Image 1 (cartoon, rainbow, N blue to C red):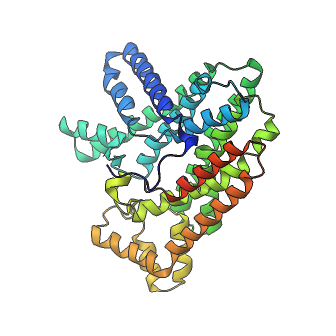
Image 2: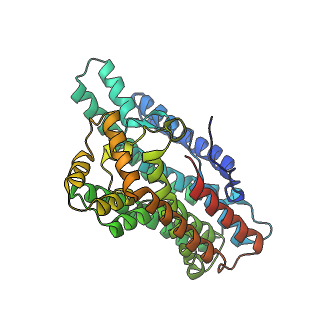
Length: 362
């Protein structure tokens, strides 16, 4: 299978262990659901399946940051529960995001709402009833994942006095990602084309919960002073924004065989990304802009229409502008890495992460 342009950086070396722990946690959650009622078996199976194929980036960052701040002898496995917690929040966000975006696939497989819609349609339900059923079930399953997230955090083998700060960090992570999602939906509904608003959404919807908060959570679990842990946002925010902007570029220009999502899916979904904001700013107030904006978020866009929108983005220079912003964010993050109270090896590991996050192909 095609992969990223560069190998996974050392910061993500804990990803396999996190993946195994997530699998164990979801098996446990699935067993709990089956124990409540046998009728929940399809829901249990869907939760386990939905977790397949993730990078485990966020959980790996928790483990790495814990080891980097706890010093010699630190065992990353002691905080796997926190890693699992952030991955459950992430999985919940993906399930809900697919509903909002009307995305039929995730990681090359049917999304959760599409899976249940198809099953209901197969039982004889109308297309409308099947789609509504799929959405309803997926909303509930996303809620289950979010409700289950705090429990594995409590199982971390750390000093009791650090747990209060860690739990507060997890709450911040959850609130910020939902706030970012709300602003994203609101921007699409009101057809907002402000680049600054697009960057705020990228920070909250991805930057904080993908990079900053996992790094902060790991440091807090290691006993770092909250003010010291907060300095990780100077690295995580720009790096997380760059990560999201790369996602936006892949959502339009990426290879579906690698990304697992249809080409141009973000345009079909009408997302008000920086890529779209930069395009609209460059088109001015003419007929081409009106046509571009009218097509955004049109569910029945065919391949030719998506290709036309993509060509407009490329031709007006918006793609180049976003690529330049990714580079600036990466540079800002690298500068901040140099100011962190870490040893040279750990700082270099974060620099390698910055390169990987901004040059990946999926």
